[in-house]
Image (cartoon, rainbow, N blue to C red; front, side):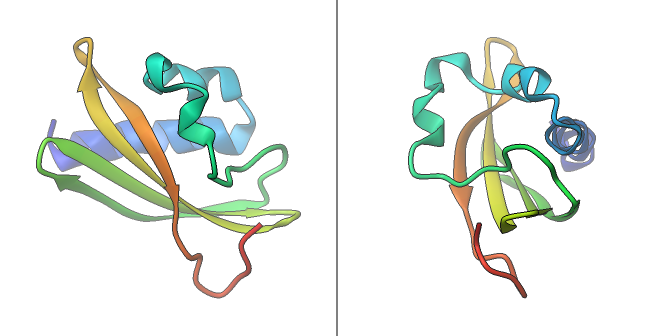
Length: 105
């Protein structure tokens, strides 16, 4: 998948998170990795006041998306690592990263 095509997929996924459509957001994830993918990771839960996609890139056979979400509890820098599973691209892992200019929620 080209980086441009991944950007489209990732932007759609971020839109699900921002709108609170967690069913659709979870459907983009590798089901076998749930719920372990959330262990030790802070993710937006509930209202999202704003967001900024910081980076979308290829890393070998993986694709990486990074977004900073603004929530009532603070800012969350969230990186998702996407891999090809069962013929489609899905988020396989999540990591937090420091969100510039704000505190981690």
